[in-house]
Length: 421
Image 1 (cartoon, rainbow, N blue to C red):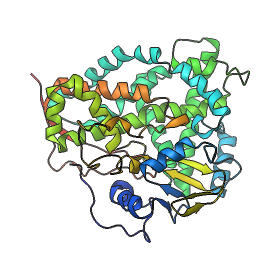
Image 2 (cartoon, one colour):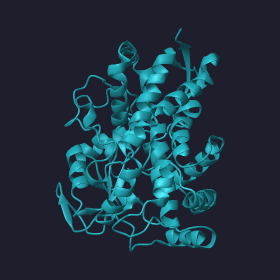
Image 3 (tube, rainbow, N blue to C red):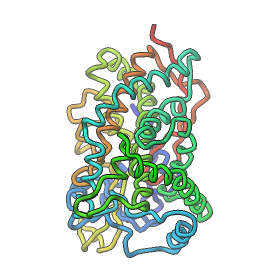
């Protein structure tokens, strides 16, 4: 079983911006699905959707629920941060996830080309060698902080290789992406938001010379494709502002942060569920891919993202006014008992475990999902091949997560293990 909070949730007092709720949101999700499947968070004003069928409906209905949510509405803090970008760096353009068709479809064609399956498949030997190299770094000590020793560097080094960033720079890049993620998480003070913006601008100045070099000297990296490929309908390549926006949102954060979080939660779940560890080790070829899917369902690295109501929409007797921000809560949908039997249990033999919504659904389904799945399967398989038993190091873990409205990220995970002979 996964560890859950079981205390009753008072909807009159609830906000998903509460750090304690963010740390263990599942009781809140249960209450919302049962009592308020369309619920307006009093702190944010957002309408939160939590049932599986409703989440799918919103994701598929791109006419009534649009993705370009920020255009035309600028709050004072956003205006202040924009001035900082203008003075010191590049104002980020709308990301792929923040566009509607036809722009979204046209821009996604560029990413589909850069992330085409054959190109991702070519990474397998590199990912496998990297996974075992990382394990080599701690296997003899019999213990590690799995988050820092493996879950962070594996996907970050992989995406860094494809984005032209040398391995020795990954921890600096991690600091920049952490700052970006903290602002995405909507729990910052104004001073912290300014700090995050300045950190992103530092990343922009790191990547700008790489863009310029790739324009002069294209190579075989994914980033070179993104820099140099013309979007036919636009008659041009991406601008610097568009590239900088994509570097943080859809490549380094989208391409590493979510995989990191799933790798971390997967090991925590395996220690807590020894019978599932036994399944995985008894037949890795069968169960490692299923492990990746069940972890994504149970502990979705992306808890929820956003849409905007283009018109007034009524759901479950609640009117969502046009212009309202809608928070589509994937992680609540993935524990809906109407879709998944005993949804809080880890069960690698459940028949429909692949029907989770961890990567979204429909037009905006995560384009990096194939790479993330490859990294999860290869990473978990390396662990199974190298480790016989796993346990938590006594007194070393509090199992806390970084406060964040959108993402679920375990801060650290200290495990001991017996190396496989």
